[in-house]
Length: 313
Image (cartoon, rainbow, N blue to C red; front, side, top):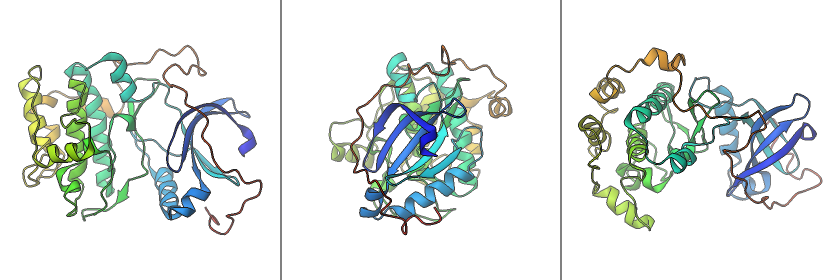
């Protein structure tokens, strides 16, 4: 299958692999391909994590979450073929447009809320919600991606400290165990950042960020509406017994908050509303929202040295 995919552009590379835009030659359809190095997965004992991610991406079926289209592996890498969302990510959108009006933020946040609700219903915690994890499709709607840290916990606790520092909940960095409520903290950070341009806990060093989070040391910008300010304080609530999303009514407390008043939830999930952020794309080969990065360097083996480790993958 590898011969059927042509690499158009490398988007980014990380510890275990890289992400690229590819074109399937036989169908002339463009995709996003996430490639993970077999060698690196074995050396870091992450093979089972990759197996779980493949199973997860293949099972997700929701309007605002990414899903697996195809999968294959060669002598070098595991390749996850995902839909190409041509509008880029929210980080790039915010960088281009600056802080967003609350009305637009509300439209985006409603979709993310519904996606988190779906994940939590099936017992999944995302653990890496951030602007870079939210992609924009050709209709101007968004999808959550980056499920590498996602974990099935139901209503139990997990203990691994992971995610992006500025979005981590205080119970995560305290290393005493955390649950689904940590995603709602990150959701509050994301709303704050979209409306402000910066996260509430911003500092140069990670230890400084953690200290700010531990003391819940942040300020509400003066341009935030009173209803947005109230929602932020209820989401960025260090006391889990008071945090919205974690109370008896669960996500309904957030949906029914005055900031989301008159939100047509059914119309959102059915995509009946014309998005105010439809990306202008000349054609399906238009890559204007994706900045290229250098080709990643991997040890490429001409023969598959890891047949046993990746059997039945």
